[in-house]
Every structure is written in C-alpha cells, then in structure tokens.
Image (cartoon, rainbow, N blue to C red; front, side, top):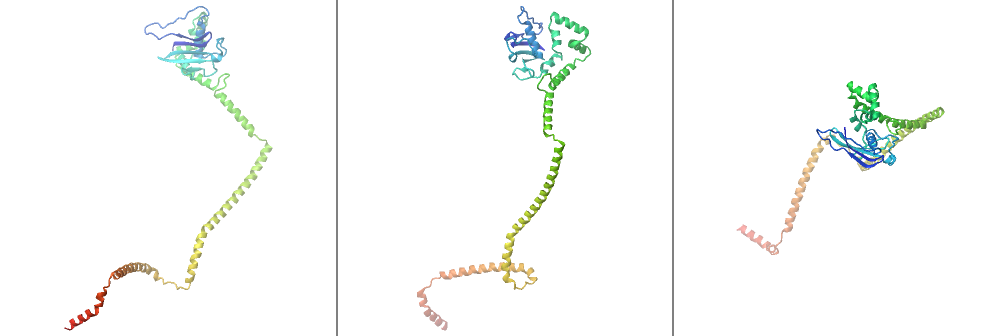
Length: 330
C-alpha cells in the first residue's frame, strides 16, 4: 500500500488542504520528507492518516475548529497497482467511505495492512524517539502487536493475517462495544419482543382452566352445528332435485292427458315393431311419389289453362265432322 494523496478536508487546523505525493517513479527512491516549524501540523497530518486507516477515535482532540459531525479525512491509496479513493468521517459505525460517499467495510483497507492494529502501525511507521524506544522493547520482549507480527512472520503464519481481519470484521458485525446495531443487538431486540409477546399471552392457571372448559363446550356446539349444517344441506339438495323434476313432471302429465283418449286402443302386435322401419321407408317413398304426381298434375293443369279456344273453329266443328264422315263413307 502506498499513500498517493492525503486530503485534510476538515481536520484539526486544516480545511480543504491536500498533500500530494505524486506518482512513483521507477528506479527512483520513493521517500518523502515533510518538514516544518513547530505547530505546522506535521503530527496532525500523521494522526489524520492513522485515523483514515483505523477510524477517528471517540474522543478526538482535533475537533477544535470542525465539530465531530463535520470532521472528514480523505486519501488516494495505491492498492495493488490500482488507485482507490477513500474518505473517513466521524461516526461510530460505517465511517469508511469510497469516492462516491458509499459505506465500505473496514476490510477494504485493513486487509492491505496485514492485520496489524493502530498501535503496531504507529510503532513501525511513526519514527520518533518515543515510538522507537517502545518498539525496540516490544521486539525484544516478543510482546505487543509488533512482537506478535514478527513472531508470526518467523513462524510462517503471516498468511493468517487476512483471516484474522475477516474474523474481526465478523466479530464486530456480531457485537461491538456500545454499538446500537449488530447481530447480537438485533437478537436481543427480538428476544425482548418475544418476551413481551409471551407476557401478553401468558395466563393464570384458573383462567387457563376456564378457557379450556369454554373451548370444550364450544367444540361440542361446533360439532352439533356442523351436523345440523350437513342435515340442512342434504335437505336443500333434496328440494333442489324436486324443483329440477317439476318441468319434467308437467311434461309427463301433459303426455298422459294426450294419451288418455287412446286408452281403449288395442295394443299393437309385437311383430309390428320389426315391420315399422319398413313401413316408415315405404311411407317416405310414397310421399316422394305423391309429391311428384302432384307436381305433374299442377303442370298439366297449367298447360290446360294455357290452351286458347278458337270460337270460329268450334262453330265449324259439326261441318268438319260431317265432312269427315262422308269421306269415310266414300
């Protein structure tokens, strides 16, 4: 990880100030020295960088110009060859932001630090007399975060740093001191809700016995009502069948009335049943022939009606017959 730019937006004595370290030049030393008189803000800038990496403390001394809700630090970090922009605000949780002010998990930066904490980072990279002395004692005693880091590196356990960071993130998500959110807080709130719900539904033994007796009596009444309901439904179905049969009954009565005058008609012989189809066929054939004859008669009548009588010829009818007779005689 390399610090490309540090933005002191609202922090300590600084307002909208940036320290740009530029790009790394291949083949050239990548060392920058910040110098200035006392009270110039060198320590403030370094603490601001630590707050960016690890979060602004709950009792920060750098709020003398900008109150806690307005404090803001930013930076451009070179992470694995990619330049990423981060920002840090004063907030108990979700204080790390990206370039679009969206919340980021702490592992976005912590995973690049190898799992070391704030004091270890300060001991390793804050080169003053006090930190050098404390760091040397920590290394010699193999204690503290720096001593543990060196021990893990010598033991070949440095690959566990990422997992430790992830586990710490999970632990913070489950429970964090004085945090109002988290899995444990949600579970406690849910437990309180269930307790209140249980107290709401909790009843005395006498009330429970009374409710059981009421339930039993209601069950008996319910079963009786179900039986009565079934009987009523069966009766309704029966009435519906009667209503559906009324039109057929009326038709049957009409048929019987029409058949009453035929009560004295003798019963047809059984053989007629087999001969009936042949009779029906013969009836159809006769009907067709009758219609044909009727059509011929109508045609002949039309032709007769179309004949025009010659009155002059009719007056000569007798003379013509006599002439015909004479001719036959000769």
